[in-house]
Length: 307
Length: 333
Image (cartoon, rainbow over the protein chains, first blue to last red):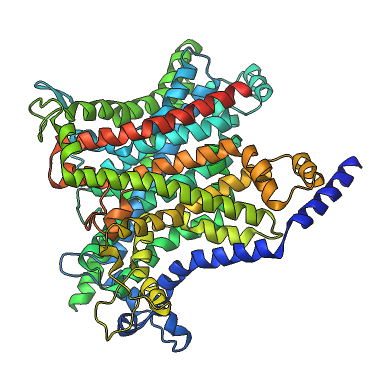
């Protein structure tokens, strides 16, 4: 009853606060925010001659559209350069393992740090959180040397090179390593909050740590896993630096972003190809984002504000 | 005919890559399941040890090989010459702080660190406050948040097109910025080539992406302000502006600082936007871009490592603050 009255009051306050002006300004900003992307999309659908002779906003008066830019950029290669569809496949081949592997390793570690009793637990937790400080750039040269040449102390080979240069493996491993600190941090925050009674009851029932993980921790952590998966997916899909460094510029493993960045340099004036290519690269992450926005926001909030 | 053959080989390549992908995922799943299967069947005493081996060790090994050891080695390489063969003392650092081009780069990075976080946070806060008063803020927030899903490379292309300039007077402008300048009676210039304006134009792209982030976080913080406090201030007759300055901002101060420091870290490490839009030319380069050039273009591991260390030193105070913030929160719980 008291709550209902309170709620009524709150609504009154809210409606008093809401002003048409605030809404108007907010909508205006949202439109402004969308115009650049919209311009790219419209341009990608215009014929080449139109793009280069008039602004995209003129389609309002003289509409003229084609899908030719997409078919050209996706399926027509140029000499030794494969068409964008091949880079699209590469992006998939990079993104999926680079998301699955770190999540698996991170959820194991998060569980261990949250529920195993051992000395140095706190130290490890804060240590991993602090590792987020290390910028990617600090790791690039040594990791690249390790992947290409292995590790030798004097003449003794500690880690052989495995000959993985030029394959997807260095890119997967690099993304796994760089994604772990945030993954462990986010998943730990979630797993540590599972009810203690539940965990202890299961222990009394004779479940060991492995069973406990499989039967209780894993199923209950699905929402947290989903939010981190979206993060990692978007981060890897949109990454340029890691792919550029560990892909070594090889075309048969380079993802979309590497190709697009290259295209803006070498074919900077071919707007019909650039806009269509960019839109193709944007489509998947934006679709994922809209479909799973709720999980994404939840992960974002868990990462930076008190939960 | 030739085209058909080319398509055929493209399809084959794609198919073989996707098969490789599926096999990788299956192998990984089998390895993990097998490890579990075996571990569960050991005696309880062995399990006490095995559980650390299975759950904790992989992460620690990856973190050590991928981050800790490389960071130490980068520090070591920063005191050595281009190929890492000889000790050169502080030479690489002296180089970084005396070369005019590098000083320009450090200055640009400073501008990024100062302007980008403040602009993104201020805009994000404004939008968060405005949408907090809306009845249905969903679509507006989604549209402003959407650039977060777009890559810096994609955003770079989107905005490069906005900044496109037509040098030939007889041809119509196709870049929106140039056209707007013309409509307003200005003469458009080649924006991307004009320093120092171009650095700010690149910052706009970053702000365009980060504002959504700031908005989402701050919006959640504003929602978490207890209603009684807002009501009390309303009964006191505080106007919208006063309430914003005296209640809202102080209540979410901690969150604002976290957002500022997170975006500052991002601005410090910005690479893709520079790479896509200017390639670091026209006096727009920043530390992360020059680090890449020194290391992987000029193949100078000494100077490259020194720049990475300078980047690291810039990030430390920011993350130290975040860690302290986290610790305080934990002890409050």
